[in-house]
Length: 431
Ligand SMILES: *Cc1c(COP(=O)(O)O)cnc(C)c1O
Image 1 (cartoon, rainbow, N blue to C red):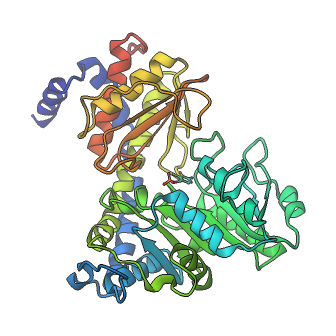
Image 2: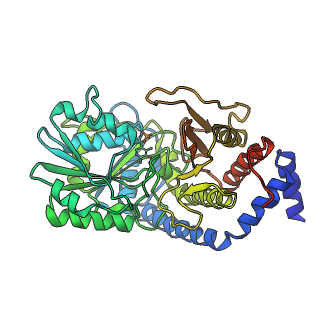
Image 3: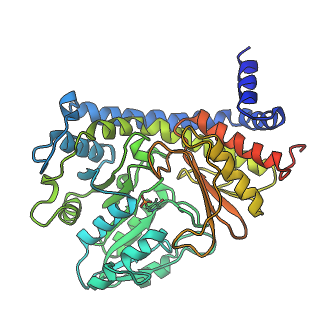
């Protein structure tokens, strides 16, 4: 029997029968849920194949360019494929965009001028953007170039503060930055539909406000993207969802031609724009990773849903809840003690294909006010579409975890977190 063999194998890998029995019962209940996740992946897979076919993708597009990178038809085709999948006019998809933060910084700096104002109608943006915008004083920030910033928080229930947003918009407002994923915050992640409603509201007040969505962690979790509902720009990292685990580096900016073009003059130089940028042979993994992204994202979403349901059953507070709809790949689990957070992260690490022998420990990471523990055994450094977890060591002891290139790895990682907690007597499986 195949089930017996799998059980035996999990046993060899260090998972107790008790942990397995408990977890398998949770998995059994998720069949319908997983089928829905697979359908979203199926739809998105077709969308990507269609864009590749329409652009007559061929192996000539996988050739390496060097130097200035003039006439890199692989790069140009990759950007057109992204634009088509996102239902947008143009895209900048480059290994020279070093991270999500860099892509966002380029999109902002390229489209803002002194005297302009940025509005965040969804509360505080992702930590790294504080320095970019200059919310916290920072050398080289947009604030130093005379760009101001206004923020309207979500209401306590997580809804948009429509009145607050209306009042915040003024003649200087040039760009609204809308973060789709909650990131490591406690607010809800926005559905693409609700992003569409927000954009419609903003455009109803001033149609010329550029609506930019920080799409990190959101790509392919749903069948539509923010550019399908009116976003002028959508920005993200290739070592998250759209790189499919294969992109070794990079970021993307997709949207209306003039705004993508503005960003390109900041990425390279005024006058050069999109025409330069050697791809050094990276086009092939960027195409292939994009092709893999829908199923990789489905694996990550399944892992998140599985973990939510498993830990909810054990009595822990989880966000999103086990039954909630998913709009990104991040799962937060509140484990109530530092020991449990450390055991959880050590479980993720122990299940990794890379660096599984390393034991993560909390350390005083620069920029944080408390120790932080991080678990990742990734093929690509810092890649968070690969199974990874991190937690600040402070009450209420919430661990954030995301990724899983395959569902089986995600599952094994989560089993290992429970195993470590069980071994240390931190959780009770007799319920
Ligand atoms: C990861 C992330 C970023 C920044 O991306 P980096 O690649 O880590 O620089 C920005 N916004 C959100 C919501 C993210 O999740």
